Image (tube, rainbow, N blue to C red; front, side):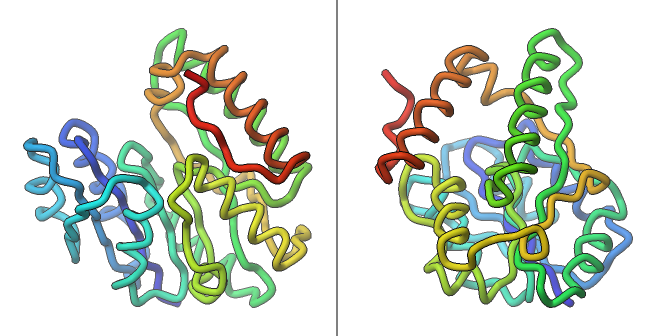
Length: 231
């Protein structure tokens, strides 16, 4: 079962290499690595070309369009969208492949840990743990820093939409279409990935909690799109 690993990268010259190295160090070999670069005058494209099978240049803004561009050339049965600052252990892709041997499984959600060794990193880890509990109860909420989904499911939904909160938007559309249960979307606590807390730190812990609580309730209760970073 072939896996297409798709990495959007914008101004990522500082963190991209370690992320791509973690992918290239996998014990599993049946995968392709696609990096989608939005040029910003730095060395991101240069770093991507050292490791990727395909480097695509994105002209439009947005994570959704970047991931869709990568998916448009991907050949795998499984799409694994991963952020440039997210790292995976050596057996990660092998375990993903094994999980999808069950044809009922449409998507897999790993557990995330923050690798920043700082006070803010620890607070970010607490926030991630809270989101993990929500995922485990709601059964269909996917993390933006890594989304793992079957190719045909992704294509049936038309990919990501160009909206703020494109990861949650995809999750909820998947939930409505496939009526998720634990056999269709598996949260696997023993499948671990590591990510940076930089986005949460940039926004601020309290502001991040406010942002996502407000937007999720607005989306679930009113069916309205995310409104962005609340000024």
